[in-house]
Length: 91
Image 1 (cartoon, helix red, strand yellow):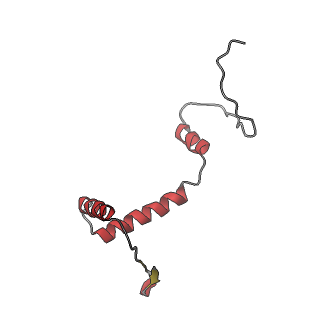
Image 2 (cartoon, one colour; image 1 turned 135 degrees about the vertical axis):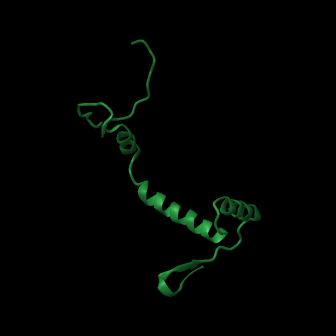
Image 3 (cartoon, one colour; image 1 turned 60 degrees about the horizontal axis):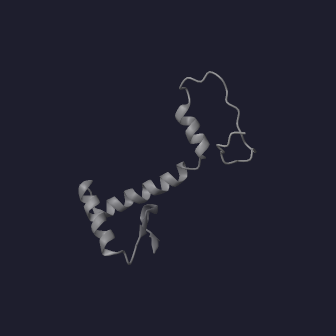
């Protein structure tokens, strides 16, 4: 159930959480020095942020890792080429 209060802040009620999950949330909150409610808010905030920022493809992520690392020429993209498994036959 989600309801809205003054100031456009939502409340979320989650029912039927396993006891083991609740215990782990409590431990995690204690470790991070906050209430269990604040811990859950942080988890939800980070989960939503991660899903928005992870919209780039694997190739783009790899390319960004190596950007500015020594190549002084453009590497052509290989879009549209069929993927074939490697063979080790002497032909």
